Image (cartoon, rainbow, N blue to C red; front, side, top):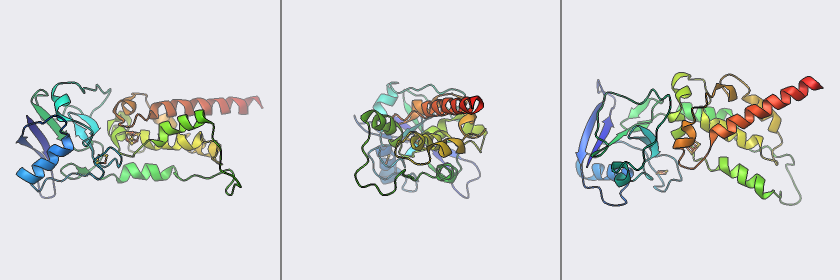
Length: 257
Ligand code: SF4
Ligand code: FES
């Protein structure tokens, strides 16, 4: 098989794609293949990783035109066509490179973020939106005498969102983030919603209102790419839909009072 890898760094006038031939062993991941390139072909190839176990979120990249974790994506199922995902309204797809999905695996940096070097992108915009939601618990009772007991169904709902590892795959797959640099994006909105539904949180309504804006809850166009690409099963689109319903309900109650 061949790995076609996007290359770009300071001093290069145009990006290019380098092709590396190797045997795809069963279980071999895209991240392992990138290490092989560094060790055996070209040690200047730049990419991010840390945990190698789908926990840190740092190895997200565009693999066969879909944002995925390199440490979790195996080569053989990709070549067998078993991991195809069809994304909607996605202008990042369809660049100038051609590849044969039966023979090649195409590896590129996450779209919608500036490339620093090869597969490493500048995540500043993504994390700025996350900081904006103030992702710090503000408890109802800051100093309880006993532990805060939770209803198991509340815990299950919260866990849908606390599973996020901030990899940025959803942000990179979102057609709204591609065209609107102010849209908070799926990950930040899902994290904000997590605080809006936490029964222990003291600022639930206030938090819901912080994203009651055209670039917050109301910026989403429901393409649902976020849910398709998330490696942790987080459903930002569900959070956004439920937040909108809650806001409408509160507006109606306000009008009736
Ligand atoms: S919601 Fe999923 S895809 Fe988006 S940043 Fe979190 S883990 Fe990654
Ligand atoms: S290296 Fe940590 S998620 Fe892939």
